[in-house]
Length: 374
Ligand SMILES: NC(=O)c1ccc[n+]([C@@H]2O[C@H](COP(=O)([O-])OP(=O)(O)OC[C@H]3O[C@@H](n4cnc5c(N)ncnc54)[C@H](OP(=O)(O)O)[C@@H]3O)[C@@H](O)[C@H]2O)c1
Image 1 (cartoon, rainbow, N blue to C red):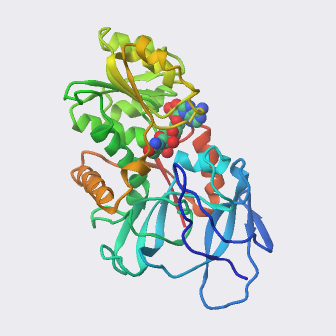
Image 2 (cartoon, helix red, strand yellow; image 1 turned 90 degrees about the vertical axis):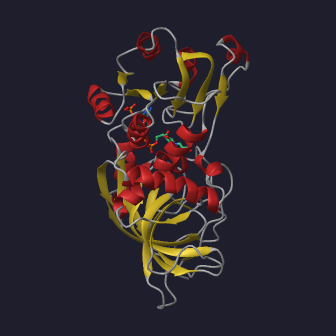
C-alpha cells in the first residue's frame, strides 16, 4: 500500500501521534544525508508528496524523506499546500526523543501556504486562502498535509509565505511571553528584562517586541557578532555569555537592583544561575532546553533568592482554542504589519536538506529564523 497520511493526533506537551502509517517498504536514493523511502504503490489516484519523518530517534541523519499520499480533510480539518515551513528548536527535541512522540514521526510545527481543501465544520478558511500556522500535531516538514484547522489562520496579504512560515511559532511565543508571562505587577516601560539566546529566531523577535513595548531588553548571545545583531534589533544591552559572567553584568547594568523577569530558553546552562539576576518577587520563566533540560529545583532556593517565582510555559497551552489562537495571531500580525517587528530569515534550505538545517541549528550557526522550502 502507498502510505496514506491524515493528521497525527496530539498528546503530551508538544503533540505526538498515534499515526497508523506503517513502515515504508522500499528504499530509494541517498541525497543530502537522507535515505529516501518510497512506499510501494497500489493506487494511481492521489499524487505522492514529499514529507520528512523520523523512524527512530537520533541525530540529523534520522531525518528521512518519504513520499506520502495525503488524504482528504475530515471534520474540523483542512489540507494545506506549503510554500514554506518553519524550522524550530522544538523539532530537534522531537527528533532526538527529548520530547517523546510515537514513531514514525512527521516533524515540523510551523508553516504557510494555500488551503487546498476544507473539511466539514470549518468556517474560518476556504479553498484558495493564504494561511499560516503554529500547531500540533507535528508534521509541517512536507509539501502538503491534512491537519486540524483550529490553529490555522488566514495570512494577511502584506505578509509573504516565507515570513508567515518563519514567524508563527516564534512570534506567538514572544506574544504570550511579553503579554501573559509576567511578574507580579506586570511590566512597565523602562523595566529591564533578561532574554537569553537573543540573536536566535525567537530572540530577535523578542528584541524588537520589547523595544516596541518600551522595555529595556538585556540580551545574551554566544558571540560578539550575535550580540551586535541583538543590539541592532532593539536590545538595550547585550552580553556574550560565553566570554562574560552574565549575572555580574546584569547587576552592573541594573545598578544592583536586579530584574523583574528573566526569559530563558537555554535551560541547563543558564536557568538556575539566572535566579541571581532577579530582584525579590521576580519571575524566572523557562521556556526551552537548547543546552539541555533544567535539573529538578529545590523549592527552598526560591525562598532563598527572594521569594521568586518560577514558571515553565508552552505555546500550546496558549493556543489551545481557535479564539485564543486568532487573538494572539492578530496581535502578532499587527506588530509585523506596523513594521515594529521585522521577521529576519537568515537561512533558507530545500526541504530535502532538513538534516543540514538541524545540524546548523544545533551547532549554534544560525541567527534569526530559518525556513525549509518544499
Ligand atoms: N515553550 C515554548 O512555548 C517555546 C516556543 C518556541 C520556542 N521555544 C524555545 O525557544 C528557544 C529558541 O527557539 P528557536 O527555534 O528560535 O531557536 P534559536 O534561538 O534560533 O536557536 C537556539 C539558540 O540557543 C542558543 N544555545 C545556547 N546553548 C546552546 C546549546 N548547547 N546548543 C544549541 N544552542 C544553544 C544558541 O544561541 P547562542 O549561540 O547565541 O547561545 C542557539 O542559536 C528554544 O529553546 C525553543 O525550544 C519554546
